[in-house]
Length: 542
Image 1 (cartoon, rainbow, N blue to C red):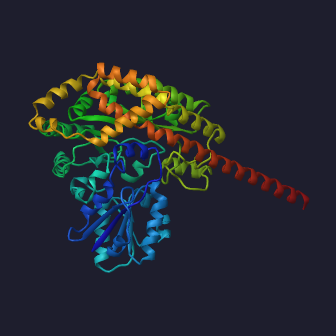
Image 2 (cartoon, rainbow, N blue to C red; image 1 turned 30 degrees about the vertical axis):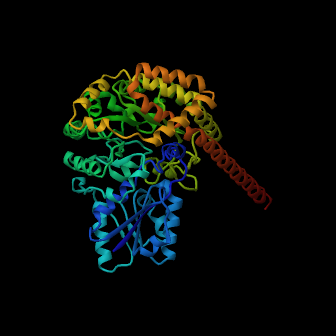
């Protein structure tokens, strides 16, 4: 079976980093891990061709070659996902769909023309789909009644990727999260009992990437890497000698809950394995909003103290923030900006709250009659899809102003510098540097060729931020201080500085799109009021 695996195109978003990727000559941040895992789960005597629409063109030759199309993606891929289903239908090629978007919006993808709905987790539903295809069935919907044992998941087909196109590689250790945040669809999709792979599985995946020549950053895509702390520690203890022996060939990053700060042993194990960054779901510094949304794990300790503990342990912090919770008081956006500045978090993803399908928030708002007609989304350019408890105009203006302030080039540079000065004091860096020198493959790493793309990127950053913009004086002063106090951190520091090239353009997009949607929303509400008044007048007259 000649199977064409399609990954839809990302719209411009917070995480798309187009301008930053352009600087370093890459085309996308991360590969489609779901699709290459699907390829490993399908019969290996099938033929596969992977087309990631974010890095390459889908050609007529691809369509003509295919006997079957499989599409996977997230909610953010909705528009291109529908386009690909339509193109497959027009060519008469059977199309199967799966992944988070298809699972959350099964009726939508079915209406768009998908033949096979391979929903939930593929370890269970892909064998059902294969059996149906082999039996000659032309359509079908395949659902899992339980969560699969991920210790049976095969090594993803990394060989299908154009590795030079990606800034980072992706692997997965666990699925599921033990917490109960009302707005989160992770616990809906993957459950509240974290399931983990074995250390041997992860090491085998890393060994495969090593064999294929990968030597850059790897993002552990778990939605909460530390959901099962016991198993994470077992993994890290077994992983440490592997990375040491190979001279630390990869740097790792991941997502975790804020309670990471309460476990110094865990943070030390992470830095021993070369984990350099973590994304935290902070959401808001307002404790009342955290309680409303049932994010109790963020209320147990002072949030700013937790963030500082993680940074001082040598792990760079990225964080997510949300505005628009029920009962939220005016000025929430300003309080988020103040928190980000206080904790010196460079990369702060900021969104208006969205009610995603099947979440506890979705069901509560539906019961209260507060869901707006329209599409739930997770992009920062989407207006809220429900009626909030304070005026939407107020929330929207706070959101736009705060986003603008967070990604002012000087504010971003100031936070990044302060963050890296704190990172530079972490004891793990000196310890890891000594181990790298003693590593078996240390000398090989020292002889890496010059990366001219990075040299070019550095030149552009220095020109734009050190000469053209208002950051020109502080840029050079901060770079000098980094050379004196945290010389080893300079490459990573400049990498984060490069993100400003994306955010400067993206904040304009956020402002323009949100203002347009708000104007449309207010016009629709005004029209509804006029219509209601006219109906009332007609009723009274009759």
